[in-house]
Length: 195
Image: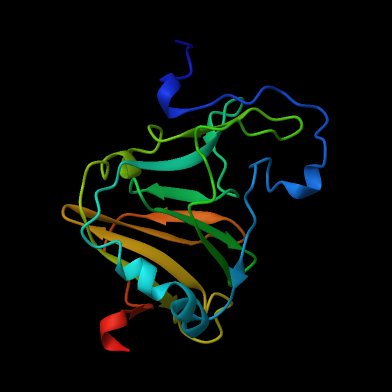
């Protein structure tokens, strides 16, 4: 076992200086292709039913890409919520673009990004680790509606409510951000039951 962590929860990359066909990879994540959308209605139409179907599933892992050299979360890459037979993958870009994909990333595969050592970890962010083993009560989409003018207005965040906690993956200015408390009053919640 190496000094970075448990082998079953991460895969080291190696410092790849060149990457064959790197244009087909997103931050060196094999087979991952983003699917960016804007606007609550469009995102809810595409992903609402599947987010709603997360209710009752148990979270096995919550993966983030970790920069080994900087010992920090690489927040530009997607956040993965592994429920066993369903994996939610969330990625934000620019001010209002959100990519939600399902079951496309294998967190046990190596990530190859020139000049960096990136690994998938599920044990580095305490807020996410505390949710492991918990049953999801609901998947959520929340739209930011702050006072005008607010460049973030219209940004859509993805949340999962658990038996004893919650997580919100939001846009943190062209990368992912995480919140673990009750969403603020600026968020307008979407639910399939209210549409």
